[in-house]
Image 1 (cartoon, rainbow, N blue to C red):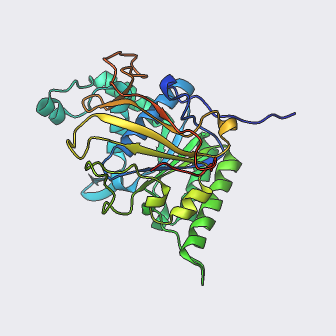
Image 2 (image 1 turned 45 degrees about the horizontal axis):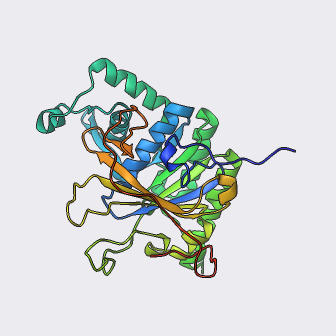
Length: 316
């Protein structure tokens, strides 16, 4: 009689078959280094906050700043917040980047308004000793104080996962994921982990393209595959030819409870990233600004059942 929660709209109609935000879930986000995993997720989080007022708690040690305060360095999250404002407005905050790349820059009023929105919806934590249990404590505190809807750990390697005496690495990973699953269920939130592939050796196709990163190409792959509810990959198909090529593919590698979430495994390939706006276009449409450009001439691809209907079969 109490019903069952389903997936929540991500704000991009073109992704409606392959992606939805799901509370109470653990999700792995994979990709090669510098393939735009964080950039893509930032855009999708800002969009969800703008549409549905979701709030986020983020742990992003690689993106923190060292800022001098009274002659002493302090760890700050200024760059994270300013770049989120860039994702929101499509305009840069940096006068240097404006002059060098001829970008549109926010006015002072636009920047203050954007930063006010960002600080109301995004909270950055830096747990003591970077131990994952300390991070979970910080997450609970932020939830109780601000009522967040999602957590992000980018990257997972930034957390320390101490092992118990005699505990194997795979057992340690499973225990860690169980603790985060408990956090997701008790707070009715989504917990997202971002992870790089463990190596770029021997992972190219015959035409020179890198393979799509899946859960088995990262450290502890079996634990990720067993414990993540959603598994997603951000892929740039032409990066081997041009590091700045704007084409992006989104892959849903595995979706537990797909009928409840309302999406299925598959990919959507008609995506372009605008380096000047820090925003994404899906089939030529920007879901934040509503701007319509010429669509990317690529087609969506969906998995069909094969290999004796094995639900875990991946065709790459």
